[in-house]
Image (cartoon, rainbow, N blue to C red; front, top):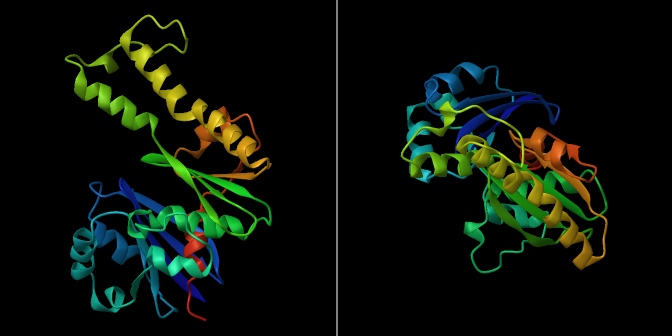
Length: 246
C-alpha cells in the first residue's frame, strides 16, 4: 500500500514515499525554493492510505496556512503526530513541559528503538544538533541541543562588519585569517564536541550505547566521531510509520 509522510522542519520540509511500511524515497526542499503547495500536490499522488502522517516543529499557523491551500482530497488526509502521542512507545524525559520537546527528537528515538534492544543515542544533525539518550527499557533519559556549524557561522557573519567568506579557507588550528578561524572553530564546536558528550553519557551510565546519526549533516557526525555510528537518513520517517492506521 502506498502512502506518504511529511516532516516540516525549521529549514526544510521533506516528503517521504512509503510502500508496505518501508520508506522508498525522500524529497527535500527549502520553504523558499519553490511553492510548497505545488510541491506537495505534485509529489503526493496515487494515495492508497487513509492518512498522510506528518510532524512539525514550526509554528502551527504556518502549517495551517499550507494545508488550507492544498486540494481537499489531500489536506483532508493530514494527521499530525504530537509528542503526547509518542508516549505509547517510550517514556519521555520531559515531564512538565512535554510540548516543548521537539516531536522530531521523539520520533527518531522510537525508530531507533526498533533497531536495537540496547541503550542508544540518536544524534540529529540539522538546523541544530540534538543528542538524545534512550535506555534499553525505552526510557528517554534526556539529551542536549548544540548549535550547528551553519548557525555558528551565521552568527559571526551577522556580527562582523566585513564579509569573511571572501577570504581563503584553510583547515588548521593555526588559522591565519578570520574565515579559517571561524569555520575551523565552528566545525570543532559543532562536531568534535560530540565525542565528549557521548563519552560522558556512556561513562555516567556505565553503558556502551548504539549510536545513530540522522539529519542533513549526518556525514559530518560520522567523520568526526570516535565511535561507530549507524547512519539512518529516514529515521524520523520510520518513527512516523509506527503511527500508521492498521
